[in-house]
Amino acid sequence: MHFHILASGSKGNCAVVTSGDDSLIIDCGPSVSYLKDAFAKIGLQWEKSAGLLITHSHSDHIKSVTMFSRLPVYAPFPILSLQNERIIDPYKPFKVGCFTVVALVLSHDCDICVGYVITDGRETLVQLTDTGYISQANLQLIKGADYYIFESNHDPEMLMKTSRPDWLKRRILSDSGHMSNEYASDILSRCLSERTKQIILAHISEEANDYDLAYYTLKNLLISRHQYRQDLYLKAVRQFEIYCSLDH
Figure 1 (cartoon, one colour):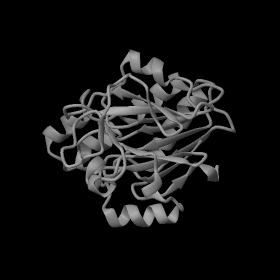
Figure 2 (cartoon, helix red, strand yellow; figure 1 turned 30 degrees about the vertical axis):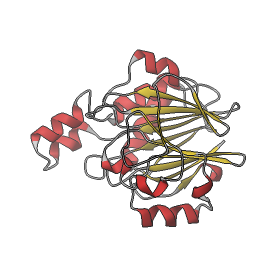
Figure 3 (cartoon, helix red, strand yellow; figure 1 turned 180 degrees about the vertical axis):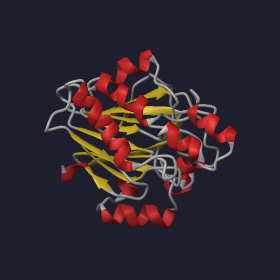
């Protein structure tokens, strides 16, 4: 299993998981022109993908969904503009190409938001952003994965110093907002196993966080808990950075 992150943050989100000849796209928040260019850069024939997974209805995750109208589109809510939509049941495994996928209900300020646990039978990837907290039930389901694409959205002190309105700050800090660096790092520490190869910190705020701060918050916590390994790759990915797991 390999994966690419094409965009991650409040301006748009998209990732691609591949195994053998199958590929699976997660979210489509950037513009159509950006996505087509990014797919070309990674050499993906996106029209031949096994499907598109949608996490939730916020525009930074779904804006370009009509671009994929000919693909099966899997979401936990109806997308009325598409004929090929598949409404998924959280916690019920479903097949997409060679992948088995489980959607986990998250806590975010929309009708429903999910993260995904994706396996090709050999390796497992957890894609989880846009949530204020992780339930104990979900924590058990995401432990011990090979790869994590995991939200580390903000530093609370930096957030409070921004010019954002108080209601927005409260929303981000709430259980239905976004995970802070410290909280995300603690959850990841509790998930880590010897099989974990890469942890990619995602959906990082460009105003209320710092990429090095997010990275070192996780690394230093793992060191303090005697969990850090030289063969464990950690990275904080930028908004429109194209990241390829094959490079590491």
